[in-house]
Length: 309
Length: 309
Image (cartoon, rainbow over the protein chains, first blue to last red):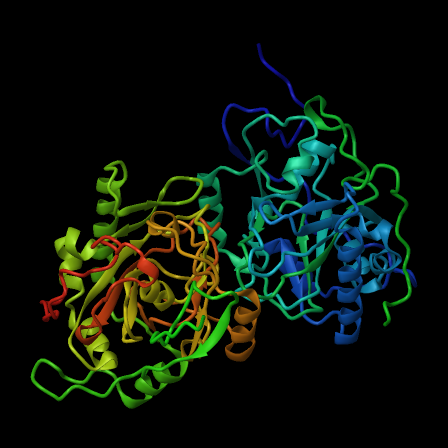
């Protein structure tokens, strides 16, 4: 029997891992200029993002803003630590707060931050359309015993578990602490966004409850990872607090653990094009909850006033 | 009852963690010059080691030598993987070979390597005496899932579990693969060797069977680690294969895990002064086996011919 599939990005259905070509643009055509859509990235930045699949912009937020945002994160951690809420993900082992999801709806300051033109404009520019937040979170990664995030393409999960149709989304990570070589910074494989790594294994229902702690499904094959890293190298995205990393939804990334005394904390927003709204998940899976993958709150984002302390 | 103790470096006996001053020199007086004791370190290098507690010497071994040594390590790994030998320590979790101890007695090539003047002379120079090997091992740290080594002072363990009397030993790590920022390089806290961090907890007998996989006793207090790191910073000892890191027995060090595809492999020798031979372990512990802490094979090392392929 021959199976016909319309899916350009099959995964978790195959007998073996595979590497497939990307079918979507990386940087989309510019939006028409209006007072609200002023150009933010120059040609060199667009080309770098197109080629590498990420862009590190130093010092996009100043010290005062970051102090304010860091305190906001700490207050959320304290408030949510023992609240037994599903948005809170614990570290495997220590039980410390690893991530809190949905911060742009749980907290007014982060609600404004996703609308800050410095990040929102970049998302619109690259995705060439109006955008909304597919997912948001703070990643605390504590000092001394912060655990690693293994290599993955976000799109592989969002496509299979959330039914995101195309590669027209990006992640934006705002550094709330200095991210040094030593405290487990984001590592990306430049150029990997041009290749879709189809993964082995079937997804169990409600997989997210485990996978947000430690991903075991949708894990790329070691030989393919080595192939991508040999081609593109590995880039550690280090920077001072206030720097921002934008990266394509299909860029292979991960991070090592953190035994230093210094937490590696980021706030993390996923912008998705309004032309790329979620469909039904693949393989008959139940949709993940709204706080992990937005299906309802998908109105285009408008600008907000700058963050101030 | 008042307990009197002659021990300058008490640990694992106290109610609380403490930080104590070092009582021993770091760099010892030079040996008298003889044809076999030619000076190898210059004054700047001696001063750097004295101040920082470590010295990174790039490219001490050339590419051909390293290829030969890397192959030697790989052959040992294959030979010993399923041999069920006590010298082989597995990774927690995956069961892959993490370390093999006693390589300078199990393998002729490593037996010669500990006598190579490029490393042996540095050990003699710094320790100001003839030396022998207290411990040797290869640390493989595989790619993809290599686990961290948490912060520790080697001397804290060697003093308490092996009865090493004074801080007159050093470790020498010869890099067999490139040690990059990304694959879990050795991290040291410069200046930490001047402070002795006394640890909490009692040592169970045969603790080494667990501690060589994952140290749980002799773990420094988090507040004291933070204090040392705030003072001295954290230095990642990265370098090309063939570089060598020498560090004091009391320098606080550790390393993060390794999710990159590239193993971070080193061969590791501990040189001890012949004037610093082991006494009985503290607190009535049974001495660890010869392959972890030499008590019998303690004759001064003489030079060997250079390693060649």
